[in-house]
Image (cartoon, rainbow, N blue to C red; front, side, top):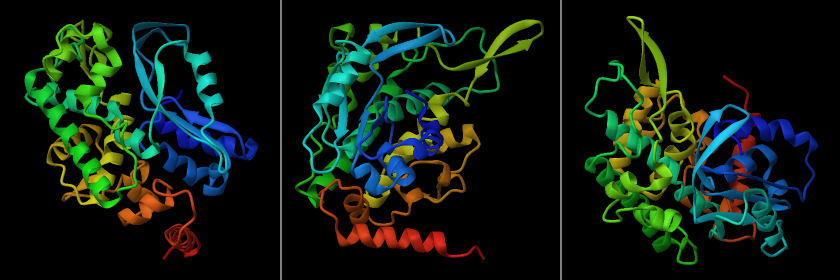
Length: 346
């Protein structure tokens, strides 16, 4: 239960003390947790251990006093979880039982199809960057606010439509993948409007559209945009905090990962690109350049391209999204990465 930008650091630190067969996972997994685990712990280690991830946090909550007190604004009704059991075993339901002991009776932990489905269903990667972009798109971000503006309750109809269009792009990735790989399972990948209804149900007052659901969900009441305090003529004002996890986590470990898969699949994502370009400008980072993920900061993401994947087939096969059996693509990818490591810097 750590910010996803710290996953790699912790996996590297834990590696000397871990033995094959261990259960290790993330809550939430964000995008590409399995890629990160395999890259840092090794494919064979992960294949002989239990790897899991929740597609989102069980609660909508906020910190009241760091390290001591939080306020739970809403508990989700359902959360999807992927448990990838050690090779040669069936689904390890014991992992789910342990997770229920940790989080309580609710939410229900529904099985996701695979890590790819969890990555593409990463709701935070769609929600947080897009709602931020929608709110600030016509505002001067250097002009302070008198008080922190509402995040979800402050969304407008444009933002609701943008969220829907980006979710449509994700579902187009799903369509292309299923067309190319008919045996692939992505049943747990839904439109964000369906995710809202499944997650919050009757906590939503008006279910007419994404816009109305955002503004009438009890679980989102009172949540504000991440801000930082500034003093203006002796008065406390507020400016946007673009170093918050909505940007530092949900972009490089979220939307960029989805965008990377779209690039491998040949799916155009103009609405997703709009949000990425604005967010990377606010962050002072460079991921997307001239319509491709080739920016100087790509190495700090979990996009497939960061891990050396140049084709969709190798990405799908090496990560066992299609078949548990080793394939030639697995061997070729491992060999190419080894060559890259062994080649001296010029």
